[in-house]
Image 1 (spheres, rainbow, N blue to C red):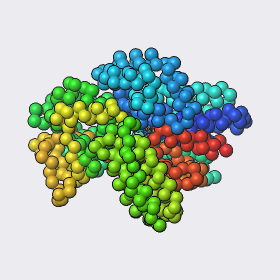
Image 2: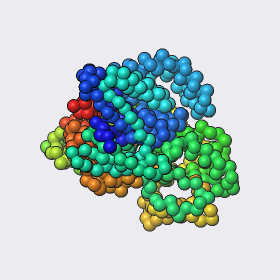
Image 3: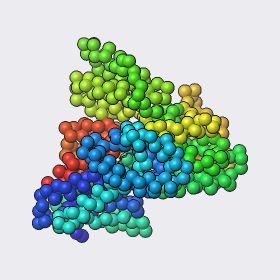
Image 4: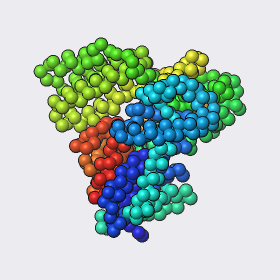
Length: 512
Ligand SMILES: Cc1cc2nc3c(=O)[nH]c(=O)nc-3n(C[C@H](O)[C@H](O)[C@H](O)COP(=O)(O)OP(=O)(O)OC[C@H]3O[C@@H](n4cnc5c(N)ncnc54)[C@H](O)[C@@H]3O)c2cc1C
């Protein structure tokens, strides 16, 4: 078995951003004697775009942050816009002409901001970024291949296990589409598998076969799932046409937006119920509104002689609530609150800091989950038509009655109760499971074989400031969330700009 220098598992933007930076390093070193053999293993048939920027997402799916905020580096932002302007007409024609009502409405709503280049206000279709990233990647790859500095092989399979073998090499077992398995060895291994797959809060196995259950809206892809919904609703009786969405995260809001662009499907639906612990969807972003004194609670705490982590979180939470009233997030205030919280955290000990990055940071972020105008408009259209109901509660179990799915849930008035409507369609939009019980065989095995240690967040793994979970076993992507070291200090890494920011540092480690 041939040994690779580097194997990367997962080919999303965490992988491509790292490889682009690595290739730039190789070109600078210009040493063909050290030609690197690299293999990338990807379980989806489409390489280099990951879930958000490729065909698993609809072409109508938009960036969650404005395109201006998509980049941390001014240089990267400038390069992207240079490319965008050069290709604007072609992109516009391709997108608007091929993507139905949603794309036309998107363009009309954003035309003024686009013409005025007010990119803080525009949330672009994500596939456009996927196209751009692929061009950058292919260009960098061509250069290193032509110069004889690296070879890149691809394997279309799911990596399922990793073991350490003789010579401190990593041996990766992967499963192909026909379920046969094979192995590959490497000196350096990079895990770039994105966020852990969505968990299931409730077991769907009690649902009758005639009830459509969608475990993950991006599997096989959102457009196929929308077609399945159309098909099931077309054949259902009038009283059955209800949809239950479990979870109100970004993918839940995105799916409501995408569905709202299909008037024919909308006309088939009686009611969509979104059941979630918060009972609300991500908030609307406002760049224009201000809070007079956004740090009222934090400043009061600051004036005290000393404080502990719990008091700091409490004050931050109260200030965030003031800055997120009536479904609107006031971005400038949130930035100040988070900045002040981090500054005050510096006065506390390492334990407190680690707990903040592992646990509380994400809890604070969850209070001000945000989305742009287009997505909020999509959800609002369901509210305006009286078809959307947001229910606050925790799902307990699913069962079937009279051919429909029934959900039992707990709200503030315990014990568990049945929701008063049955559903023909149930859509799971809950977040990832903790890694020690992940449905990803790879992540489960990495944690249980003790090659990676789950960090306090439960959704990420501990790494050192060289991105290593174990010697020569590197991690890049959302799995880094919850770490705090000299290089990586983020509680939330489901964020393209932060991943692009980190990629050059990992590339440097891989090039050595
Ligand atoms: C639907 C969606 C929309 C998002 N929108 C935005 C946005 O607008 N702005 C933003 O900043 N961030 C957004 N994010 C956050 C996102 O985490 C990052 O932007 C970024 O895409 C993460 O890149 P990645 O390469 O780490 O993960 P991914 O894009 O998820 O890519 C990981 C790849 O690994 C593959 N893989 C997983 N497990 C295995 C395995 N065992 N074997 C082989 N292959 C495997 C997957 O098939 C996938 O292609 C979004 C995330 C999602 C899911």
